[in-house]
Image 1 (cartoon, one colour):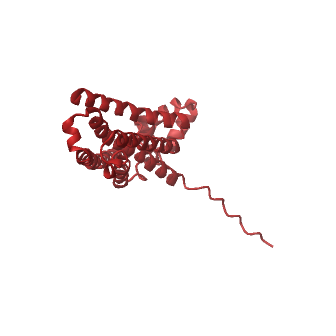
Image 2: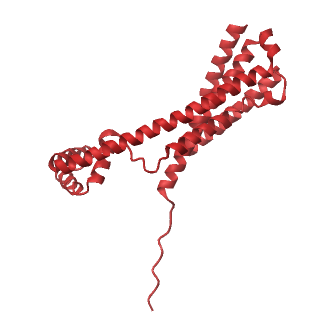
Image 3: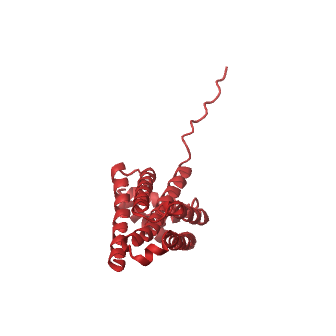
Amino acid sequence: MTQPAQQPVKRGDPSALARTQDHLKQLVYGGNDGIVTTFAIVAGFAGAGSEGVAQIGALAVLVFGLANLFADAVSMGFGEFLSMRSQNDLYHQRHAEHIRRIAADPATEADRMAGLLRDRGLSPADAAAGAKLMSTHPPLMADLTLSWGFGMSAPEDASPVMNGLMTFLSFVVFGAVPLSPYFVLDPSTTTFMLSVAMTLLALVALGLLRWIATRDRLPRAVAETVAVGTVCALVAYAVGWIVGG
């Protein structure tokens, strides 16, 4: 009796994993800038501590904080979209150009590919044989030439719209954290310290997301993320103290 063929074990889609990691990177990128942007407003007002600022109170923090939050979030979202769209267009343009070169002069392009293969440890004979074989598959050869020769990766799985949206949403969500105490409490030292504590927790969360996305060492990922936010906060507080004090 014929045994049924075994089904291959599914181990996950590498492209899906890469997209997930890319989205996590966008969350870290947008979230860190969002936190720094709004906490700079909070720390600046707290450092100023002048009577005029105190009279304006929480309204000033919220007006300036929210204005900066949404303006910068839109700017960063569109900036990420345009940057990624430009990269994709440039890649496709150069990819098509390399395919035309291979069709017009396959020997020269094969020699160039053989050089790239030798740079990666293949013997001259193996490099020449591999390059000759690849010259019969121009799209693959163009992909490898752009990747190895120019450091450009294929953008098929990358969505400029999604990356821009993720950057915008992360900026808004994380950027709102330092402002949140001022929605319900009057400006005071306690309110400011509560904002500091919530900002610290948000930075730790971003550090954990960075660790998941990059698989860097956990203490380093968290410590560097918190350190960057702390330095920016101290600078904003110092400037507010110097100008308003």
